[in-house]
Image (cartoon, rainbow, N blue to C red; front, top):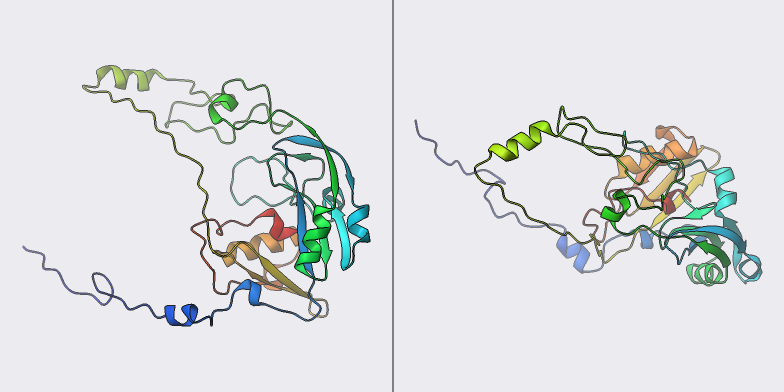
Length: 274
């Protein structure tokens, strides 16, 4: 019996791209192209330290600036919006869209400014003064797992997110494998053992279009429509509905043309909930 290659309509064939002319001629529609009547713009004041406790936030200068509509701190938003939902079965600490008390990475949102245009919002956000008591940061995964004294979340015993081990070996509370006997035996009886250390740098996707979202709520219908740069509108709808206490049938997420993502726009970020 012999297998003969059968030409298909797609596999193994040259497929002519159909979306390119519209995009390269400037006829695409991106989130930044969505303009709504009376639309307001939002900007974030972000942390410039990797780990610390927020001691005080002075928003008076931002509130006095022209074009500003509102200023909210993370503590104020935490009173209105619950922690972000987790889409995985892993144990996870409460994580707010805007840090209420403690920051855990450089760039974490601390406060939000709402203004009549994006530039006034950005200027007002930059005027917010924040006093942060800096704490030791954990930036090396091996040090974090080797008795690093700094624990990022106080409710957790260590910095281990998910303990994993080969089937049947068991995992200790500190993430160590409880029974290594089968693994040790396999190495001892192996004809060849190859050891190699590999370092993989942080992945930083750089899409031409940054992340963004435009939202419109219709009180009469109690419906929310969001135009998002997401690569996964269904997950975005599920999580937005969950955090806002709305039914999924009341939330519509539209993903127009997306200017690149490379995986970075699959997840839903805290800024989307703010």
